[in-house]
Image 1 (tube, rainbow, N blue to C red):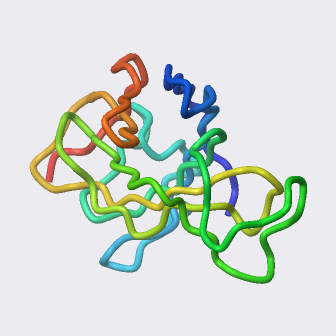
Image 2 (image 1 turned 30 degrees about the horizontal axis):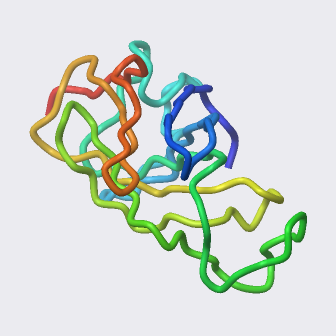
Length: 147
């Protein structure tokens, strides 16, 4: 996986810290990937809109406790650690299917959210995270292709 673009989220709550988010496309229901002839263009950018069914990987910080727990500063390579608080991803106000929300096995202290681009959304739309009712603002946008 190679990071494609940097998106910034700020979740203002005593429960969560501000989060930096990086997205990477890892595939779609049709088996395509981020290097499917688009010349390395950024998935979700105007040059390479994301497509319904593609899974975007979103990296960030400050998403709260995980289970099973882990010592601060330890790598999460021995087990998948999922966030305790439900993470919802919204694209254009529509909920995306979240297949994973937890600590990334590749990076210490970094969270990973895998979210499928929903159908019925197109154009340049807000990409938001919602954690137990605490929602990021709508200033981060992603481009989604017409079907």
